[in-house]
Every structure is written in C-alpha cells, then in structure tokens.
Image 1 (cartoon, rainbow over the protein chains, first blue to last red):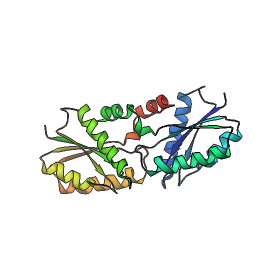
Image 2 (image 1 turned 30 degrees about the vertical axis):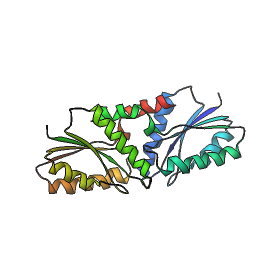
Image 3 (image 1 turned 180 degrees about the vertical axis):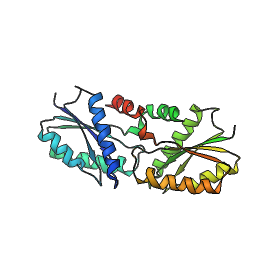
Image 4 (image 1 turned 135 degrees about the horizontal axis):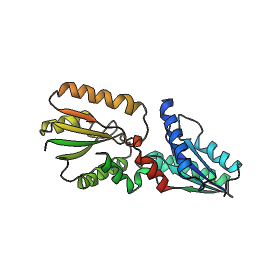
Amino acid sequence: MNNALLVIAHGSRLASSNDEVRALTERLRERTQGRYRTVSCAFLELAEPSIPAAIDAAAAEGSTHIVLLPYFLAGGTHVSHHIPDIVSAKQREHPDVRLELKAYVGASESMLKLLEDLT
Amino acid sequence: MNNALLVIAHGSRLASSNDEVRALTERLRERTQGRYRTVSCAFLELAEPSIPAAIDAAAAEGSTHIVLLPYFLAGGTHVSHHIPDIVSAKQREHPDVRLELKAYVGASESMLKLLEDLT
C-alpha cells in the first residue's frame, strides 16, 4: 500500500483552529484505518506544513498515490485556482506520483443532510 | 411559527462561491420545509446581505426566534469572535427576539463520517 491521504485546510492565525484540523485528521486516520499508508493534513497558508511540503514528504516516504481532500466549504478562489495550481506544479515535479485532487467537502451531497440535521 | 433560519457563510470575492451558498440555502429551505418560516443566508464579509442586515430583516418580518448556523469548518477567529460579537450586539438591539447561535458546521460529529465517506 503506497497511498497517502492529505486533508487540505485553509489555515488560520488562531493556533487552536489549526490544531482542530490536526485533531480531525488524527480521527480520520483511525476511521480510515488500513486504507491509506499515511493520513495527514496540510495548510494553504498561515500554518505548517504547506501543501507542497506535505506532498514532498509523502512522495519521499514512498507514496505513489496521494489523495488530496480540500477541507473547504465553498468553491472560492482557493479551491478553484490556488490549490489546483499548487497540485499541478507538484505533479510536474513528481511525474511518478499520482496526485488525485478530490472535490472539496462542501460540494458533497451529504453536506445538505448534515446541515439539515444541525437545524 | 415565527422562527427563521440563517445560514452564515464567510463570503467570497468570487460571485459563484456566494451563489453556491445561496443555492445550498435554497435546497436547505426545501429540506426543512415547514420547520422554519424563512430560511436564508447571510455573509460575514464580501457579499450581501450582511449578518446584521439579515437579522434586522428577519426581525422586521416578525420572526421572534432566529437560528444562526455558521457554515464554517474550523473554529477560527471568525467563529470564535467576529460572529458572536455581531450576534451579541444585535441581541441588545432586538431584546424581544431570541438569537440562537448554533455551533459551526465543522464542530459536528457527522463531519468525520462525511470525510470518511469522501476518501
């Protein structure tokens, strides 16, 4: 198994917010047990590791398939441009690694159900 | 029934992103049919209506219970400070209206399941 899952978050000036993403990633690691060799997170800005650094690290560890899941709610410029641009550039650097950029979380049909349950 | 549901999003420079929140709100209105007199959205910044304007509008329409659901993933400064401050100020302006600020979407236990399903 040479695949890695990267949860991509925006990053916040508030350390507790970034820690929250890290904690969620830990829990997701437990939930997806065995399906990915590694499960980690990366931040677009304001926190570490950056997305390029996390991709480099996963590739250096021998991952040949890296699944990137944008933990974003709406398809703004980050989701539509910034993240795809970063992933495209990294794909050129790592031609032997498959970088699979998933749809952002907010695009999921399940989100509507989640919102309904919360109201 | 004198209650209103307000989905609170950050707002984006990208009009399509704000329209996405509006479309999601439309669908949520259908899903919660009959449970709220009105279901609408409001934006913290970069889009209209603002949160104060949306609260004023709901109150003017006769809503006496306004449920505010922050459509945010992580508990950054917006969720922890900016939105509660806006709601507190509006609560003082509308003492006869109950403003109920819900936990943000990312705090939901269901989010982990949603992420798991997407990976």
